[in-house]
Image (cartoon, rainbow, N blue to C red; front, side, top):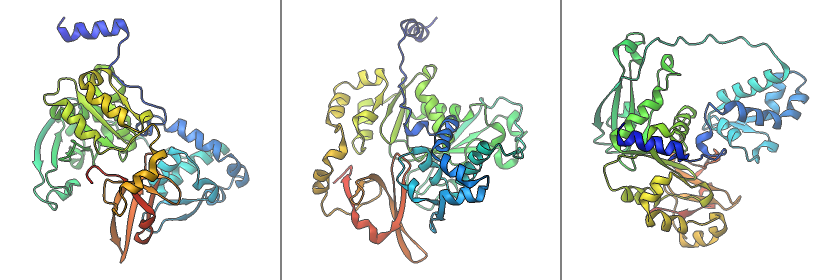
Length: 380
């Protein structure tokens, strides 16, 4: 038995864990594993509308959805639902009208016990995909290069995931390779194509992310991850067998290999210095906390217990500063805090978009930006 095995055995005997407890309302729990629970919450909220529909789905849907955003094609909810503080509802709205209506139909069908035609299950290939290879990286030299990989930031990297032959031979040509992209800042990782449908259920996503963590030393992500990837992150954060350390903030997550080669304190400081969070959202692995020492303690003590209580002071601090991508802003008309996602022109009209950890997204005409004030920026 080697030293690592002995250490793990002792920790198990003593009940010690290096994982972190993920709050039930964290953005990483907004994954397909927990959808049934969240769907039940929405079903309870919609009970009056379900009863009033008298078994007519169209009538039920129209009582929930009153319109469609012409720009981002997301449903506009009825007035009594728009102010509802429910992350799952907001998340499903952000996924577009097709998925939202599918959720409504599922809730309606469950309520009225309507028989639905079962979709044929996709064929799952009989192979072990764990022996994959990571090829790369290819590096984006300019904003236009590697656009087919959903890369636009200079210096971003693409790693191809080559599946073992026993799996690839059973897949369509288009599914035989997938890829992971890594942004040059904070090792922000994306999995645009995802796991081939015929390989789902084999934990391939988790295995690929683990391999990338081993290769890069650490990875980070934000709340924009898909439901499937959030499930991967929840697994990474809560499974002690992976030998990882983690830091969870209000809207971001960092997962680190315990055997990382590099300046852990520097990586931590660079990661947290431009993040907006509150104390109650912070979760950290005990070993990482001990490793960081005073760096973590000093940073944690500097965080506001309730950042919203000092918003007026923050607005004055950034007075006259126009929002840019990555800024934290407050909507002065509602008091809600968002991340600023950027602005662009659409059919001759300039728009901007903001969103937050509750999956509330707003896309508005640029004229409305004046009410959004910057309250946090990594560099002034």
